Amino acid sequence: MPAKKRITESEYEILKVMWDAGEPMSAPQITEKLKEKGWQRTTVATLLTRLCEKDGAAFETRGRAHYYYPKMSENEYKLSATKSLIGRVFGGSVKNLVAALYTNNEMTDEEIKEIKEMFELD
Image (cartoon, rainbow, N blue to C red):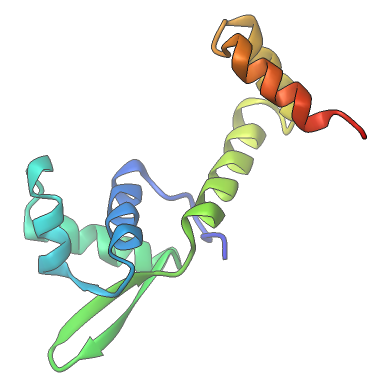
């Protein structure tokens, strides 16, 4: 399920924590996983609220605590983000994306070979 609005880098960090956990998590649990970033509980709470508003996450209530979970898989997120990037930056053209990567030497010879093999017809 693609998000209704674009997910920010910080919101993506929250989603990664939830995907790794594989089960609903409380805000304090998520905050603990992100402590190396120096984020405070209020920052995590704000990002969780935004993710829920964007339909990227949801929560279930257990007693007085909310337990959050992603509403999209990591693959769904990556596909949505890729489509958004191609649309915004490359005018909707995958060819333009690949050409930019190729002409700026961002692709190794091995990657080019693998891509060619993906498109070879039997």
